[in-house]
Image 1 (cartoon, rainbow, N blue to C red):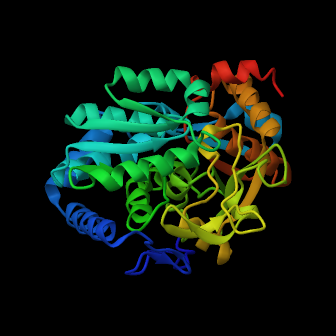
Image 2: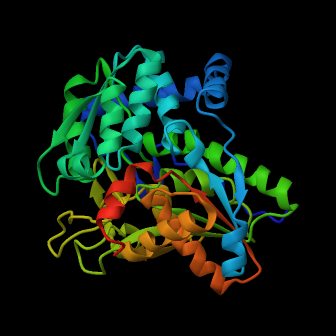
Length: 399
């Protein structure tokens, strides 16, 4: 249990994890983001803020989320497979963890509105939920393609009182939603807060999101040891922007005997525009005011990203993930659309748990690991449930 190495990595004062991160905003927004950083650092050291956040996580979001031993799946594939059940949180995914934190911070700063982007709609639902709870206005930017694809979540956001802005530019998916949300925020930052939906964006947001999502890793580590008396051999999570995974990984980074795997979307294939595997195929570049590995064309322009999972189709990735790849602490690999949908059905039919398509990428990879490491213990972050994806998956006719 004491077999640890120092991987407790924090950003430097300029917001870099190694060469990744930073803040490439105009001066007026840089000043506002500095205010956010100062307010965040003050808040997390404030007893009242932490008491309110912890109360909401327990009595509103339903934490701690349990760890489930997937007995049937384990017997079928050989290894012991365990699921960290973020799908059981209020709103159906891990997004509620940071949305509550961001909304509390916004209210503490005297803001009146939350502005957010969403792909699969889970961050949008969680942000709309937190805004409703705390009496804040809420504008959600969502690509037109995703609005059609994720209709159940769009309906939830509307019921919760959020204003949904359809983004019609480019691929009409997550990147363009982020673009438009940033533009709107730049005009309203004095009275609104941009509630970023993943461990991406300019400093201090990757640090803020990791802080609020680290509850996943802390809980999972304690629960797993309580269940098995040992640490897991492998920890697995899907990676789009990287919020659920950075939260999960944070609980195990210092345990050098725990193998950690981040799973990116291969989508339809390896060609540019067919996937959203930034860590696998990306090059160093700047997107949305921070430096990371970015999918780019031959001219250095940000390329279109694609995944069957709307929450993963982003052409960049969190800066800490880039750094963890660079130093070799986390292994990043890919899963295709077909493999993810196969895993969606496999978990549903074998364990009676319907996963989100995003989480299905991690499930699919865990089944591969089970064949590679029989008799080992594999802990998977089941980051969300599949209610939002059912209609879409049925239409794919199980590709």
